[in-house]
Length: 387
Length: 106
Image (cartoon, rainbow over all chains, first blue to last red; front, side):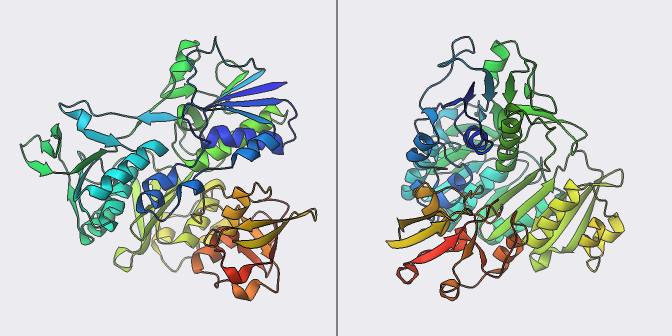
């Protein structure tokens, strides 16, 4: 009995943890590419950059944990091919994650990226000496970095090609609110702006505008690490293709987390998600399957982002929505946006409303429908839809 | 550094040193204590660091903020009057000797 887990991030760690919690007595090996113990990524663009969180607190567990649980951890090792794995296995779990999409414009080498602990530390170090920071990309990570830079007293500019921030994941109302909040705190937000080239201390836009920057950071999305699966002949789409049990086209090989594309009842199609919730819940599902208790993966997705003192929480998947309903007043800094497709509730964004978000998680998981006119009525008790 | 005692749901207790300024959740992770998960890393997103605080020490900790209150409503194990999320309990010297009991599920 043996499990090999390729990938030492949140999903890989959680698979090993959940296997032992389920009573799995076989050997467990985690092979990770980075030279660190498994750690959490969310603080890298938030608390760690700000110095509010210490580095030792990003690690999910101390080294003794792995020894005590008899989990073999091989760090700093890149697996080249599934034909030559460091150990043999009965079950293989691919938790290989994703990597940053890189800029391809002239001068691209002047930009830093932030996905790993080492990259976060490099950005933090460079931030200390920088007076001005330009972030390319107005998604979660880019906006979190811009907020951190501003909180550290730097001039901060966000450059986004789309006409609004977080365009891929959020409704226009949410984009507008975050733009206003960033601008009110001194972040310069440039929308519809395309990067032409980078110079060591400037970003040149297509219209030849030059934005000066002591530090340039790009957060323009990620690419799934699916090469191992591809080379092994496993089915690959936008990430490693898995079924509802998170099995690849080889039933002894699972794929979870950022690298896996799975059929989601919340998307009415296949999705690949990049989140802590997705990594943890998929890892738990796979551990159960290996322990002889397979169940389809049905956990409801949720996400969060902290920018300045603002918390954005999402329940469900805002994919292909055709109607959005605003609940509450953005000027009060507490509101939600309900996303519908053909009258069915698909997702809820909650801004500074943790209680409503927790109710939304339950609504989405239960596939409970709150009608658009009910959502718009701030007096309507959302919990009544759960009864 | 303050001595904190973690008691498992089966009654096994472990007393360890936790750095002042660290949370009770972080203290459990640093000392390799099972029973506290902390999946979100202390961001008040997951309610998997639920503990029952010894009654004598309960008043010494800061009061429950609304955000913690929200998540305490979503704990896997029963919520009790002495329930807290341990990521919100920052250790200070006056907490030395504090005892927390971990629930049977997170």
